[in-house]
Length: 382
Image (cartoon, rainbow, N blue to C red):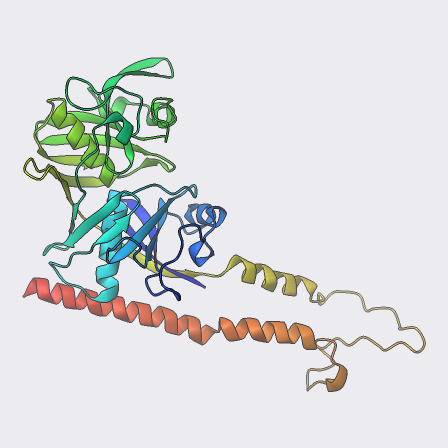
């Protein structure tokens, strides 16, 4: 059984799995932790045939000196370097799971380096996202560094020319200022920018409209996920790019389809800080596909009630036994039971995934989460 919790940050939703106590300590990056192959991740994130989500996030033992390590997978099974909304969801998940209160910080190792989220008194999460990458090779992009101190230029997508800027937040972003963000055909141009040759590792795409120097509105096309309601690293990159282009202040509210984020580029430290919500949606369990397949095979092999009676056995042959009827009051041939092997497999399956185990698992998770939320809300109310 795969136990998960679903969280969302401004509508950007993820399945969270706690692997901090995996047996053997740190798990190599090459391993498919929890059996999560790219194909299974894609199936889990499918909104019609799976649980549904923009990605899967794993909390794992540290491997670079931090408190823990985060791995994130997009809905298509690819692994990006970082996700701002995702790390806020991870921090909220950890606080709920461990019963932590305001002021708690986590030193989280990611493919983009060390990221430090903090639980604020109002229940939102502030994330120290580190300094942005503004050199073309760091983004990476083939755009040249322009007069505003970041990669910029003009790119053509599907026959249209756009003035763009790029910035890295541990993952690549292209920012395109426009006059009316709602008039942009996101499916057409977002998909084109993502795979533009100017971005050798592909890129996240953000169209932004300036409402005021401290108020921006943007739409998001995430690399590997398509249109999403929010993107934390994208909001940070957008604020950085707009400030360098002279379009905004270094602190602004950014409205995304899922809601607002507060972004601050601190001039003294050079770091970008992001404040925003992350909320629990529900908990669940998903059975191992191999176990489900085995159970279905067992069911398929059972005779149907309307199956014609078998022909009479040849002389000297041992007659077959339908244990569902003949043996209803007990096995009539215990020394040579034809169903012994099948029954043993079923008993092994049930012993590992009993109803009591599933009920206890869900009850313990709900009780722990409810208790931590009650304690947190009682602390806020006091």
